[in-house]
Image (tube, rainbow, N blue to C red; front, side, top):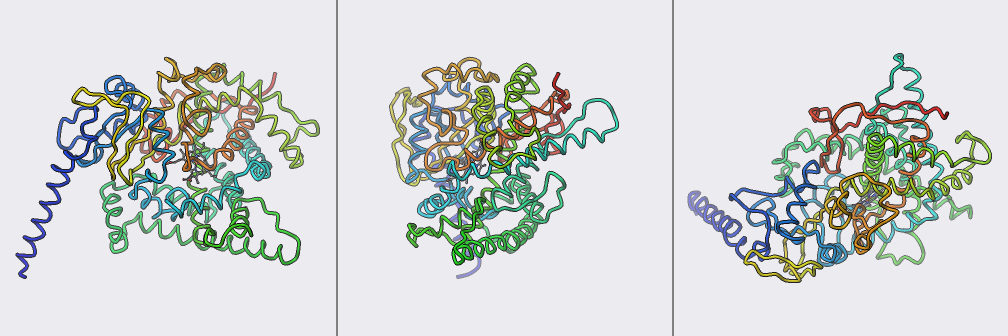
Amino acid sequence: MSLLQLFLGWLVLLVIVLVYYLLILPRLNPLGRLSGPPIRSFFVNHLQPVLDPARSPIVYDHLVKHYGRSIRIRGVGPWDDRLLTLDPVSLSHVLKNTAIYEKPWQSRRLITSLIGCGMLSAEGQMHKRQRRVATPAFSVQNLRALIPLVFQKGNELKDRWKDIIQKEENSGPHVLDICHWVSRATFDVIGLAGFDYNFNAIQDESNELFLAYKDMFEIAISQGNLFRTLLSIYSPTLNQLFPDKAVKTVRRCQAVIRRVAGNLIQEKKYKIEEGERSGHAYTGRDLLTLLLKSNTAVDLPPEQRIDDDDILNNINTFMFAGSDTSSLTVTWTLHLLARHPELQSRLRSELSSVTTSSSPKISDLTDEEMRTMFSDIDALPFLHNVIRESLRLIPPVHSSLRVATKDDDVPTMYPVQWINGSTSNTVHVPKGSFVHVSIEAFNLDKDVWGQDAWDFCPDRWDNLSEKVSEQPGLFSNLLTFSAGPRSCIGLRFSMIEIKTFLFFLITNFVFEETGDKIIKANVVLTRPYVSGKYSAGSRLPLKVIPYVPS
Ligand code: HEM
């Protein structure tokens, strides 16, 4: 066969593929007949408006009013008409049926290329095995054991800020980038809680392992070259043959993580085995120790165990999924409280009612005294309302995506509108179609939460409508932590962290706005940026004034 014939053969194949994806597939997809926003050109896609938290509440409000709660939106091309659903019954169906609805391989491949195939990206039996082994580590009892270290870090952050403010020459209020500082502190917490390793990031940011994780996660959120990222998802050999700067950075970071964290795993395994041999069981309470113990438990059949690589991938996953999510919640909550000084004072009064019987100095408390103190903090009703409201209004994970692995009829609570004017009670989702799960839109739905759904009103939680209690969700009828078998495993962990940090920060400082306009952007998570200064990265400057009780 001549080169010309080969070329012509490829050309014909390309034309057939293009005709199929651009002309035939869109006509075969029943979702194309579902009502939804207009498709004015061949290249239109609706992803930008539905994914941008600066616009999405208004966009969703408009979509529901015009097209109902089961809506067709256009994804990356004419072959990608997808279902966007704000129907509670449909959402529950999609999130619970993990045998049909999986995370798309494209996003799983991207996550796996960074942190390995841990719980966030694994599917099927592999996911079930990993989740089963990790679940005991997140039990109430085990998390209680971690409270002292969270206290230690909350206290350290407070002391560090006091130091910085004291050393500052000028007498005016000190401005701190809350986003950056709280992120350093939550990294420290997850390092200690995750594998008993102190990054010491509150003090300085020079630790080798800390920098490896930070640099690698930075690549994940830097949004670099979108075209190159897409190309490498579909053709991973591109990165192997022609690594760019980002790929080289990831490789360097992964090498550090494998060496340092890999050694930590071997050390822990040795300590556990040594404890068993000597009859003095090793009592480490970090997630790594608990994972290793649960993985070797006698009642766990050998085929359900995970190997050392999976253990490391899951520690990476806890670092990735568990640090910025919690720190952004604390950051956004402080932002909301700075905008509502009266609510901030009310919260401070409530938090100040928590005292210890023995010493006023946290560092002098015993572990058990800290746990008792946390139980008191945990029981405070207004604090709980403030956190629920902040997690409702600005969920760190803006949305998620699922793909149907077989044809399915999705049930609905509200009638589905079709472009020919008919209605139905189900939506047929063909195999291979995406379902867009908008966490934020679900949390901000005015039909459910009332006309003030977009406002920060912690008191709403004392008087919820019946509609709210009909909603699915792992936590307080919110989708913030998702729902079903793939919901967040770290919910309780993050609550301990968020409540403890707010306790230390609100009882010691007053937070005020600087006058900068803060905007939300969806960069893997919903992050704050100073308007007009996007290139400076995610920041949330606030005036931080030491609080002196009167
Ligand atoms: C405010 C804090 C947090 C929020 C809002 C949050 C939210 C979420 C959401 C929405 C998901 C589902 C993602 C999806 O389906 O695409 C998820 C999954 C997950 N989260 Fe969290 N998360 C938080 C904190 C944490 C913490 C502290 C940890 C670990 C220490 C953690 C570990 C995980 C893991 C491992 C998964 C995957 C679970 C699975 O697929 O089985 N998260 N989280």
